[in-house]
Length: 402
Image (cartoon, rainbow, N blue to C red):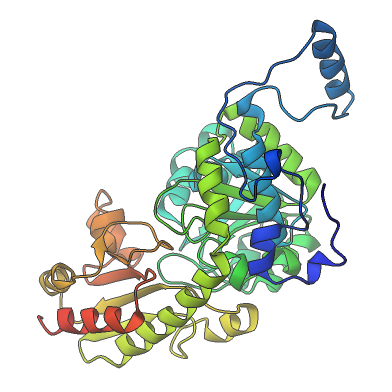
């Protein structure tokens, strides 16, 4: 039997990640959410099928499930908890972060419409805007990640402002209330990818954003062992997202949802560690004589330090910096690291390192890479859950080799 809590909206993120907005009944009184590993759900009689289809057409729910592409009990429990953490009415899970990004854009874009993107957005998001939106008859602009640049880019046919905060890899923090003000005055939808922020550190919906996206592969899953994405917002908007998700077949599997929901149980604890470790490593790097520049919003040297401190509780464990020297020195430093794995992604239990131009922008022309800041000596760290003193010692010994 479910229990109705007195005021779950007062609960902290760590509690919401475990309980959602209250306890729901589970099969066999299981404490953990069961993995419902099935592709379809049977009906007892032919009449039940007809009644179900008729009720569904009328917008009534007589039973939850018919086919796994349309949803799964494990998925729905995970969505419930994600919505509670974010402070959203509803969540829709996707098979990956990029599925969440692209299908959300496709859900709300309009023929002959115009979408504004910010320049420091995720590479694949930029590629979709540049190479595919035009095929749908949709215009786009890519502008600096500031409210002023976004406002100047607005056209009469603009219907979406899409941005990230913080951005990747420079962790630019946008003035979200200012962007929302621009958008609402013109009836433009706002969509923000807050993967690097996480709902532990930033709450865009509370600032008036329409849809928030996350790559749940990262901090939410937290163990480098799953791929998922999520869109969050009002029930009405998420109903539209759900229709697109089920049509395109971007539904995550039950095991993925189970792993994600399990990861959420330690979300708050992990984010506290990520925030503390990120700040400690960023401060060490900024003071090191072999580091040219560091990007981490908690540092006063970051261009968006003031905005970040006003809007965010912490800044996670992604740190970008320039090694003094060029390609050779940067690679020597990376190769000397003992605790950091050379691979993309972030937010997991293992610490990761990437030389950004080689890992994510290798196939771009050299001049374009330089124009967007992907220089040879740009490195991005994604700290894991190791002891921060060990990580700092490893970074120092690697820097000593160059």
